[in-house]
Image 1 (cartoon, rainbow over the protein chains, first blue to last red):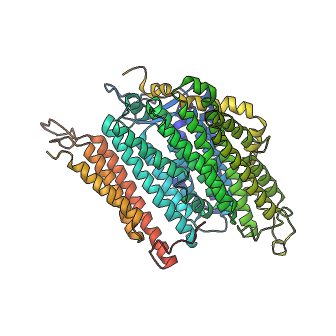
Image 2 (cartoon, chains in turn yellow, purple; image 1 turned 120 degrees about the horizontal axis):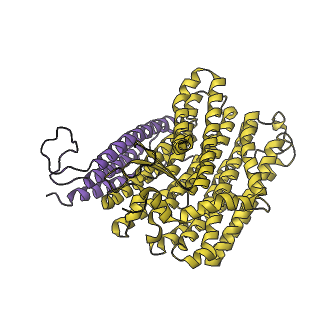
Image 3 (cartoon, rainbow over the protein chains, first blue to last red; image 1 turned 90 degrees about the horizontal axis):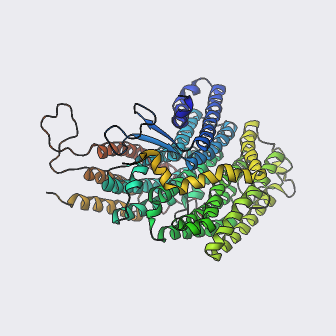
Length: 521
Length: 115
């Protein structure tokens, strides 16, 4: 027996330890506190990557808390699992790895970015609590634990968004997010209640095994889809996104991008693994597709007219979430039909899942560069910024890379995933691909605007003393830049070794069930 | 004996809470609406686990017991109540901060972030 079987538990235990030991590390002064934050975030990412590697080699990992043995999913004499179970398939491990990289970059960026403020031991405690919540949502195999981790992540993010609590806007943004988030958490709890009432189980695999579509299941599905799309920031409940993303400190925004992916993860886990083939009618797939198309278009049109740089980027998040919803919705549409799945469904899912990692990386990087601008030049308003490429060369370079990636300019990674999405959605309904293309053009337009106004142009006298940002912020940004460049250079390898196993795991409902429930009841 | 009446109560409390969140203008009333939603979710879980005539689900020194109510929903509800407590406390403290900044609790006047 080797230690690697405990990896799923370690992924949650390390950031949790980091969170609750932060105040103690804070007693040791600035160096100890910063060292602790860097150490914990590096370890968390390393453990997540090891877990991903293990899952890709050995297949779905199961971990049972509190049992005599780690793989003892069915307690003796019982035919359904009542333990606390972590279930990690390729999709979960992939999402956890993506989220932990975003968390690592955000943590390094925050070391210098937050340095002039007080209460930083509380900041790092909340930060790691948010990381724990995000990773927990992605690793758990249990509906109720999903709710608990969602609430951990939500409560931590309310605190982090309102971290600058002397700014009225930050408190207002946090309050808005809190209303939306608590509402959706309660919807999820009620949906779990419905499913529990029908099947006396809260384990995803156990419920999925017994699921037969009826009224209670339909009500639960509607509650889950509504609340999880609300939490991920899709139109029509997107209005918290620009406020929360713009007002949170930049390092936190980078992590919040990862956290919104955890809600998306929940949505797809529910649609594919919990309901899967019993979904029946195409109403839910089409609802997700329509929400995706609306998010893409409304998000990008709102972004074009923004003057504040982080608000502009936040509206782009709405439109990028739309791409992912569109792609996975098409995959869901093709789920019951093997021919359609082979023709376009699987391509769409590959595109969507590849877009998840691309989106998290370049969007996180864009928010970090916006934070760097705010840190150095002291303004987020595009009308005031200008000529900063002269004094901030590294930030400019990384901004250009991220902007080219989000606009889908070949050969950057955004182009690859968008191309897969265009190809597959065209097969379903050509208009979908047209909207996606127009969105991409408008994305390019608005990032050209940002680049031209903030970085190019004549040097302004009030920015004469502006210098490049400190080292740890550059490290945070370079982590994401390196990942983007690797994804750009090796798209075929990434598709074959990371994205395809994740897409296969998502489609394979029987495999997900049998990992916990074993051969038969 | 009670039949479906508890579920009816759950529904009423749920819609009251939702109404308060959607249509009330005072922040404190919105907070009350959220607490009502939490209460309805907790009540739903408890009602789902009830078996008529059942006793508390403790085996030690239980004596002669025929039916017990289900223990899992009670554990779930206990967790949900603790989470709800944390959320309510944070919600109220944010309302306090908002009042300090804006000098009002009216949602129509707390809108510096728009567009």
